[in-house]
Structures are given as C-alpha cells and as structure tokens.
Length: 118
Image (cartoon, rainbow, N blue to C red; front, side):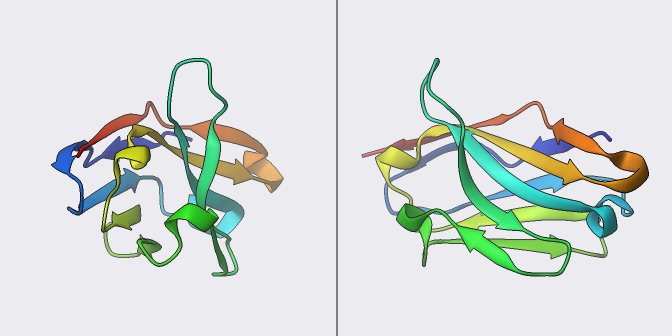
C-alpha cells in the first residue's frame, strides 16, 4: 500500500495548512487511516488524528478544535486541515494505514515537514 503525503511547508503561528495523503481507494474500506507526527528526532511518533473505516474520528487533545481529518472520495486522499497553528505543531507529519484482511499490516508514508514559526 503506497501512501504519498503532500502539503507540508512553513507558516507563521496562527496560520493554516492542509496536508493530503494519496492512497488507493480500496484502502479506505479496509484500513483505519491516521496522521501521526514526530516533533523531534528520537522522539516517539504521536497520533494526531484517526479516521476509522466506519467514519469515526479521534484527535490528540492539543489539536482538538484546530485540526480536521477527512476523506476526499473523489481524489482518494486523506486530508488534514490544520488551522490556528502553533509552534509546537512543528513536526514531520506521517500518513499511516492500519489494515486488515488481505492488506493486513501497518503502512506509512514518507512524511512531510510542517514548520510553524512564532
């Protein structure tokens, strides 16, 4: 399963960015999709937001009300709309798929850098 992120970049605090993760359409039916981030080398990746195959979502407490995860069916992408960005949101963001059935396994994108300057 190939996951390809795009949309990272540099923005000032208070600004917005949208990340997208392109994936094969069938992935969304048999995988829970998520965005995770690593804020510094050697630090554990943390779950930012989760979109389950049944449509339910979950967010890291610190991003609730600021980030929105969604699936664009027309483009077969997993999107993360980030608003009111803070310097502590600076990280490498990864798209991830936790799959079952014939796709069973965990898959990762290559990561995209988000830098928020204050």
